[in-house]
Length: 274
Image 1 (tube, rainbow, N blue to C red):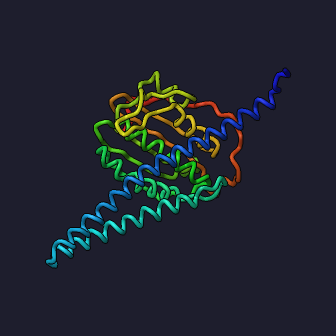
Image 2: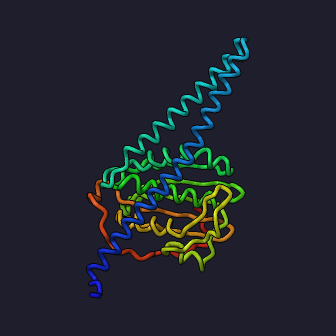
Image 3: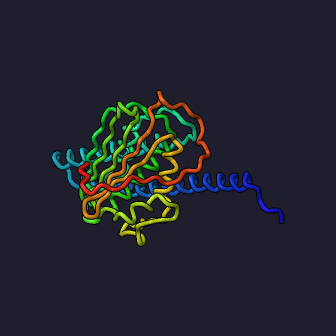
């Protein structure tokens, strides 16, 4: 049997990488669908329960309260469906200007109830950044991964700070995701972007665990966008991921380049105060 050439092996690697991207995207979409389905069911139960209450009680104050709650639930349901439909329309694999802060807002809205359930308070600090040139669904995948990881790192709840800013000196747009969870030891921090590596021992109480693919795929996506991802972490203090992306006016590409990327992790800072 003839040994495959280097070009053939490289082509196989590219195909496998694209399959990995597709698998990760499907997993993220399935995770999001599960979250939104549960939330939509809660909204429907609110509508049903208050409709029943309004039918049982004939007095005007009770009926007004029931109608008010039904209206609020209906408006939330409409926002959920509009957000999901908007995301579904943004499934293109082409680079285009993306409103990063709008993408963050939509994703946080869909994850809102889950974060509340695990007692995670979110502080989003938008910096009025310019649009980035990106594949929107891939950047959303990265953001969701970082938020879910942060939630899992804060087993007893805590603060999650999300901040966008425009680094005028470098010209890059920064997205910071900062948790105050368990943190990552220095010996593990250098490996977290490696393929197949995970710091998680198994599924958490929500049924989600780690397969070692998430952060590696995040790294590949960001590097293929011409950006960078940096992590700072200290055990007992928390972890801060910073994603750096190019504004739309600086970058005009229409396809994902097939470029081999090696993990490049910044050293942890023990006195991080982001």
